[in-house]
Image (cartoon, rainbow, N blue to C red; front, side, top):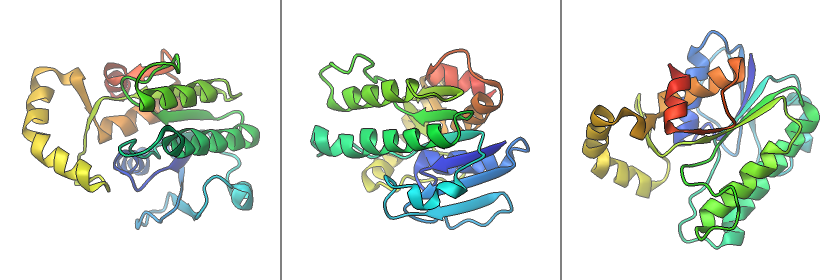
Length: 221
């Protein structure tokens, strides 16, 4: 299986990249992002672009893939709906449209979030934008498209968020996260399980298109 990975330097993306490099079902991983991963591996190829909304210069390198794992995202904190939507909706949909044209036989997996609003009309700005993004992706002519809606994600294997605020939050909350994992294992997932579940969805499919934390953990088994 050949995989394109967007957002490989983010917290979730790092975990997904790690699992792709470890899994024998994955033959090639093409990381596409604004910065290099800093990793070297026989399976790994990289494309570094300043403007990810314009993939025309590298379209010849994006063909012949079986799946896209889209882990790129930004926080909505301090942003207007227009600003947040520019990346969350605009960039994601632009990438999706390009890949649907180049590789319609691929599976597209998008990292969304728990609480996403499929109606696009709820009170929460980020949930509306995420819902609009999901709906647009689901209408595209891919072989299959899955929206991952995790809640709390525990980073493993030394992975850290690039966002300072998130790093502080995870440090403070980690004892509670560990306790929650022991008491209610499906109240959270991990970067490892996210990667494993994406690979499973691409290789063998998933029972539904919208996948919450429990569904992700089941797929990762």
